[in-house]
Image (cartoon, rainbow, N blue to C red):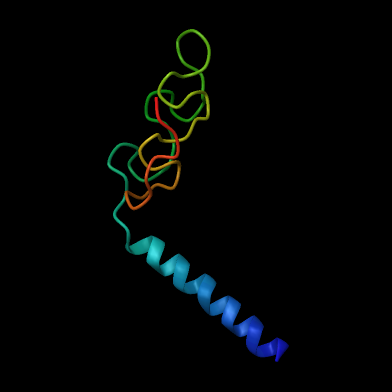
Length: 75
């Protein structure tokens, strides 16, 4: 029973990885998930980057690098 459960968990993880690779890359961050305004540093000209709120992650893909994920936060 435990062996079947482990195999199922591995198959689900592999399927999730394969699905994520099928999603188109985010055009804003070129698929790297980093904020294009601050290059992923989270620091802008004065303090924290205004585009990513200092997180360093791409606003449009929430740092996932694919367009299939909606933004996690709004300005």
